[in-house]
Image 1 (cartoon, rainbow, N blue to C red):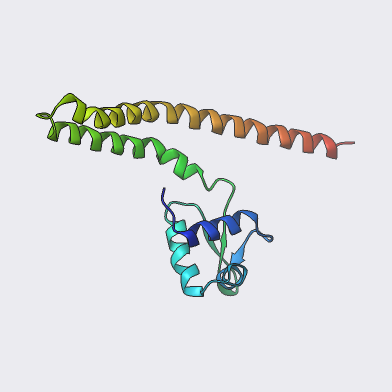
Image 2 (image 1 turned 180 degrees about the vertical axis):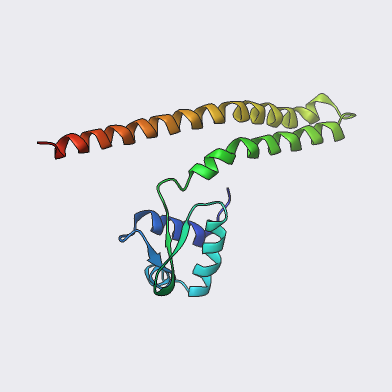
Length: 149
């Protein structure tokens, strides 16, 4: 996923800021950026779910945050991205069928790597999500034991 430098700066800031919800003005001040740059970048980051936009009752301002599960949507769509790249390589191979094997080798390698990654990413993502859920459950269980007499 390609990002502009401002998107990287804004997302990075939202990953570490305190409090975790910030207004556009707060972000602009922290990053020494214009409100317009923050507004456009917020749209870019909100699309794939990397940041969340919320409002508060009685407050017309929007608040931005990078929720802990922000990467889940990106992880969920990762296999599809590699599938698309593999399909592009397949189309390239079909278009260059009359060329020498040497000239097609890079496309074949791209296709093969994308097929491998497409196959393996869902397994890895599933493993990560299970491990994360278990770790959260473990932290909750430990916190619950601390609070008991």
